[in-house]
Amino acid sequence: MEAQAHDAVTQASRVKAIIKLGSEIYSIDADKGSTISEELVSLKEKSMTVLKEFITKHNAPSDVPDELVEMSSDDEEEIADKQAHAKSKKTKLT
Image (cartoon, rainbow, N blue to C red; front, side):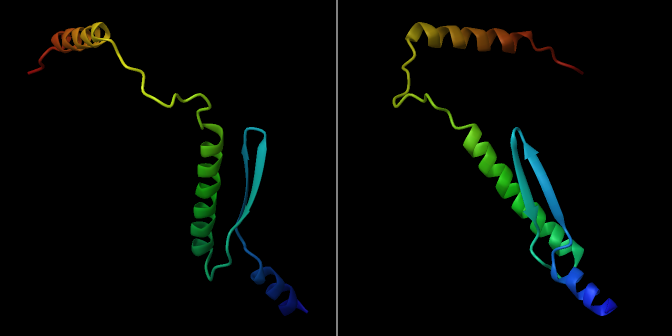
């Protein structure tokens, strides 16, 4: 009887996780491996996939223009002036 209970435990994954991202909850079960380390690697891969999909889903910009906005030459000169001014502020440490 004890052997049957042990077999039931070893057939299922020993590594599981629940991830809550905002209002969404994900339950992840690792693939069955011969060692806990293999199951942890599997869990990590699955977790990273869930995280990547969540980030992609929630960070997709909804109002991206089809064409790049052209900068006027005045704007370009202002940016160049600011960059030159910022570089001149740096001091040399010896």
